[in-house]
Amino acid sequence: MIANDAQLAIAVDEVGGRLQEISDFLIANPTAIGRVRFPRGFLRTATYFRRHLPFIADNNLLRNLSYALMLYDVFRWILTRTDLAGTARDMAIKNAIVLIGSIAESFARGGTAGIIGARHDYKTRTLRMVNGGIISEELKTELDWLWDMRSGIHIYLMEDSEYDRYRIEDYDRAKAAAGNLRDALTAYHAAHAS
Image 1 (cartoon, helix red, strand yellow):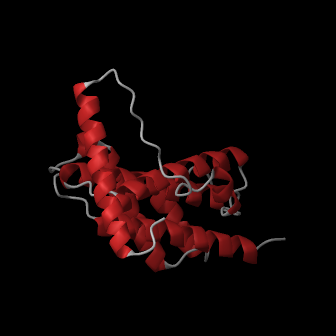
Image 2 (cartoon, one colour):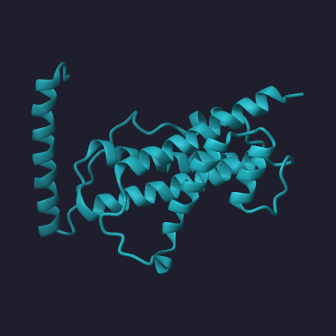
């Protein structure tokens, strides 16, 4: 059992070295099976996520959101527990942001079902959410930024190189925007429960 930072540093060095040895062996022996156990307890369960989304009434959307949030936890592990660097890290950050944008879109759509019509696009919906007192203008700005960042899903539309474009600060900002939307929708529905 790791009890302090010094023991943690030793364990990280040992595990990192052993993982490299496993990877080297598997590259040289591609038919060998060498799957490493993913750490238990880091990924939150679908049930956990469903309990924390009381503003989503559609059961299918709720289930699918809980699965997307589990994938978010996989990205979170990669970005916070590994030393992935360079372009690969940039692309992991990008895809985490794309996922968070899709989750925020689903929060907005599912959380305003019956309040804002289904035909409205994302940015029209965020404007209507401000006008309806569901979110603040500041949160709308952050959600619209997130939507613009999410547009990176369309690789063919990228006008510039994606090299060195995505930062961990962008990921943190995206995470905060989606979390604040979840909190705003939870508060709004709690205040308007009949």
